[in-house]
Length: 281
Image 1 (cartoon, helix red, strand yellow):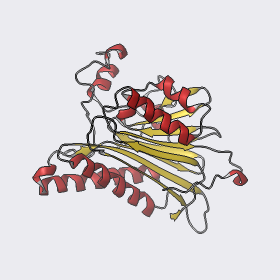
Image 2 (cartoon, rainbow, N blue to C red):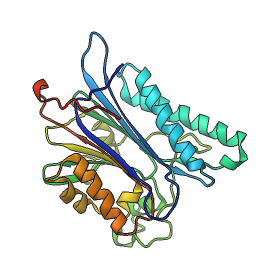
Image 3 (cartoon, rainbow, N blue to C red):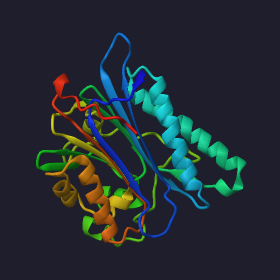
């Protein structure tokens, strides 16, 4: 693919350390491309990563993940996005484990990852951990990803109810993450409708986005404190930049106990004359 400084989407990316005084271990990147000299199809790749591990090692892991996966995407031809996701997750996991073995202060470092790759009008996602991917369409919000946490597994098995989530002591126990001794399989399920089974969710990859859709990637510093309906309300009637700031402000008003990172990808009309020409930064 060939990198460009102008995207075919409306975009904003914002990160805040929160109010706890902790170092910001979140990282993100947004990059725009077109496929080749002979194929002008545009694409945008976005990734959000939330580091885990003490002594600033979480920040190292999340930065490595963002940089390495972004580079692997950039070097691909875009023909097989799901295979490229797998390649990226495996490669960065191997490197993080290697670096942790070489430096005792980085032992146990790891990170979540949430990726969205929009090629023309088609959306592909991959994720590990509890950073989330949402789709806002009209008056509806849908979480496309599924958290890889102890709590989510308990909900899926009928052991725990939704009402018990917020106060559960295992709320932030992550079951799949990058940096694990067992290389994590990127989750390629995309839940477009409530109640979809795993096979249907995976078959949703490459779904066609519609004008007005907004894809959001975010870390749990937002989702712990702002619920889905509040996100939808804030996104309606605001520019993406204003909405991103309002979401972060609301999380901070409620305690801001963690780092907060948000990437918003807005789908314009597909008439080339309406292309926003947003510059990734």
